[in-house]
Length: 92
Image 1 (tube, rainbow, N blue to C red):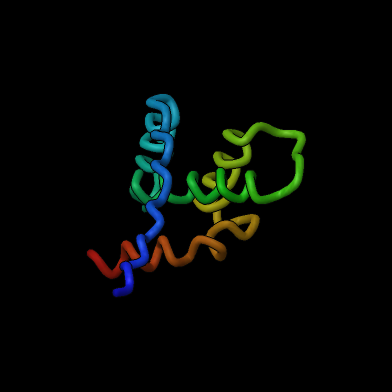
Image 2: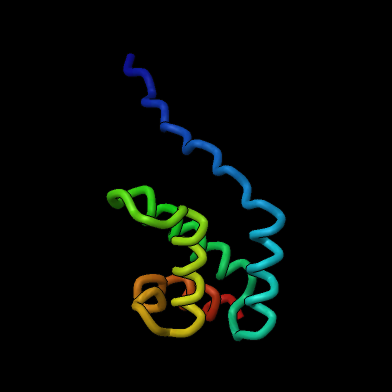
């Protein structure tokens, strides 16, 4: 008999700090984006930081910069994270 291949479980994500969550909620309040969307963009910013080479900024600054780019529409983050925007539009 063949044994079933076990699916690899994704490692648990480290939760966002309360200060980051509060900042994202504050940024979302003045925009058309939800805090959940901005959290997803922030996570992608963290991933982009880790997948690239060394940078002269911290991971938190890189991720928040991506959020700011997403909100303003400048810098390409909105284009890179367009699926997050489309996903939420389908639900509403």
